[in-house]
Image 1 (cartoon, rainbow, N blue to C red):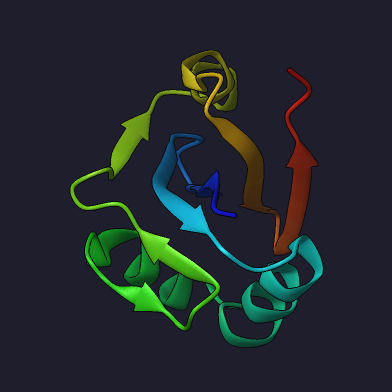
Image 2 (image 1 turned 30 degrees about the vertical axis):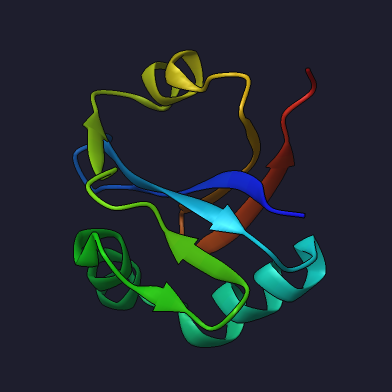
Length: 101
């Protein structure tokens, strides 16, 4: 069953860029994909800015869902009840959070 998630990066100016995805794989599989293939700021920005792509069968980016937020808090406030996971790249590391409903 598909879950919705967001992939985000905290930019140098503290703004946050993100994109929403349908997640078909387990959290461990998605974390493996992000940590091993999207480990640089340039690769993550390319992923987020692609706006329309399929990342294996684990993640499908939702078309035109790219957003820019002023702060991490603004990103968190924008998360609706359909989003179950946040994958955030900050200070050179990936963080994953399960959104409690």
